[in-house]
Length: 353
Image 1 (cartoon, rainbow, N blue to C red):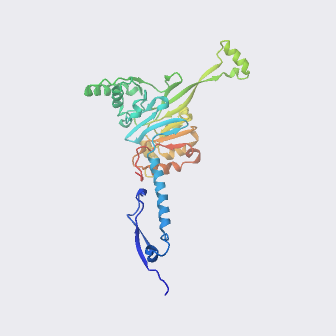
Image 2: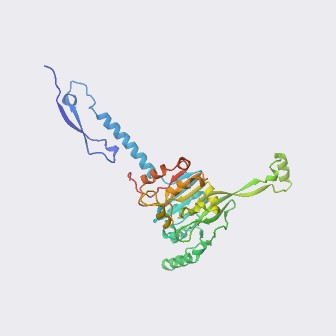
Image 3: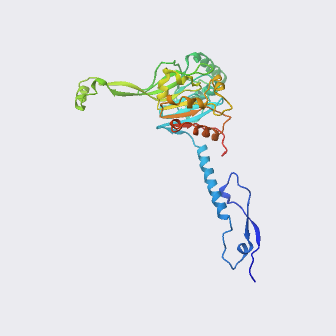
């Protein structure tokens, strides 16, 4: 009599370690009775089983990669380490350990506490609200008083704010508070200086450029040989000029008007530009962004030719967006920008969290 195997349904439970985000509790696969239960025949792999496992492994690997990207802390831009948070209307704090500096203090992460220089762009709480905590924590750790730069028009208000916190908390809040105006220069260390530049927000604001100081051979000696230059130098002649090289620029909150201001050219040619792109989609138009003192990513595309930076860190996205929304918007930038733009997505929700 010819053998005719009967089909039965057996349940195969996914491998527990895979922890698939969208996996069903079980997978039903039809297998022949003779294959599943016969002791006299070699055990065959159930039809579809390998394809199910392969698909599960691929999905798990994609999930792990996405989670790793979401949970990545900080980024490296042209050799500059950048850490921090920037969520529109909630918190902005950008930490630059290389320069011992922080831009804005809407939140006080532990990494920021150990930086000696703080640059405040404007007085909105999501950019200055954690200043008292920053000062108090440094005092708790017995760190030296930091140097905090503010727009001149808010210095007195900041002093009053700190005095209120001193009274309420009975703490000293030691700080060297400096009103640094647009066009003025402050020496951070012997090879670094900082200068504010004008930005355009709904309240007084300014950005900052940090420059490195470098020596460059004077033009009048450019035609000389090495031995001749060495002879001049040994004789006491000053053969070099000191030049300022813009390393990093931070805008804080601003409209796109800062891009078209010729006085801000150093910000647009700094090695790294950290700027905002609060709005990304068509539901919020450019006029709405301008009215609230912010930029739409379409304006960055519109003014692409002015960005001569080697890297651009986009920040301050609205909390309405997910990590995936942000990355999709950045991927639509023209190639001249997309190759050097990195979005700061720390703190944003994701489909993978």
